[in-house]
Image 1 (cartoon, rainbow, N blue to C red):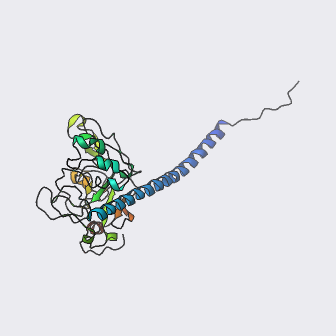
Image 2: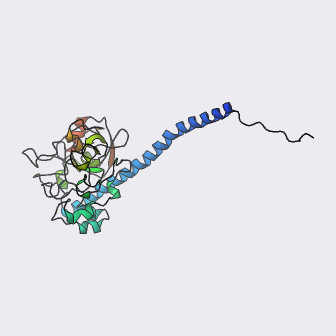
Image 3: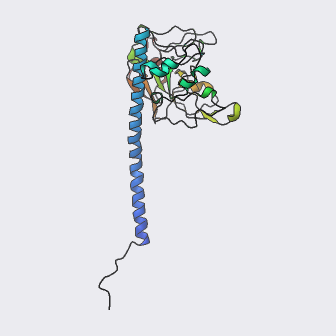
Amino acid sequence: MRSAHRLRPGFTLIELLVVIAIIAILVSLLLPAVQQVREAARKAQCQDHLHNIGIAFHSYHDTNKAFPRGDLDGTFGLTSAFVPILAHIEQAPLYRQYNFNHGNSHPDNLAVVSQEIDLFLCPTAVIRRAVPIPGCDANNRAPGSYAVCSGSGDPWTPAFYPGPENNGVFTNGKSKVVRMRDIVDGTSNTLMAGDSAWNFPDYLFSSGSCAGQQRWGFTYWSSPYPLSTLFTTRGPFNPRRMDGDSSRLASFRSDHPGGVQMVLGDNVVRFLSENIDHGVLDSLATRDGGEVVGKY
């Protein structure tokens, strides 16, 4: 007797391949949109980080009647501008633990400077290697991805050789500390801080057990060196390689597509296109240059 049930035909190989192709096309169409949404969320969080960093610097100013130096003692021997604001970003225990009589690399301060602080890390920025690597990174300092702006000139001036004072909000060397009244260009026209990404594939370790390996970046949030947390607009904006010029380490750069996030003196965070006119960028970096800054 024949069965009353008829066998239903399944997918043919061609039909299965067509379905797979359709799914692949849909995924390829949806994936960029999903990535854009995720980056938009990360970018918004980065803006919030920079906004809160700006508020912390203003709070420090209200307490001390001046902004901190980019290198706290003017010799690159102590610490960056980010350590004095620990008490203003709900990190008071770390602030109290830090010994300001010693530098950021002193054994007394390693317990503080080895702490990764979420506010000092951009959510988009990729730390492209382990930090620290024993024997390669000095004193186990934790990474950061933001730097303050010392103006439009040479980041090393006037620390180690004669030259003009820094013309930004955060100074180094023998330059005077900056007060709010010194920002005569207006806080809405003056950069305070911005992105610093670990994205230089041609930046290599030059010594130690890691010599020759990719170093990628040098931004340790506690380090006062210009190549670490004290940047200027002198070099190319948002560079992707060092190209043999180590001063590019002192250039603002990010992993955000197309530009860099910066917080201005009025605590407004702006996304600056990597194609911004460099003259406009230099004008934004100075606190008292008297430039007329148009649309950007």
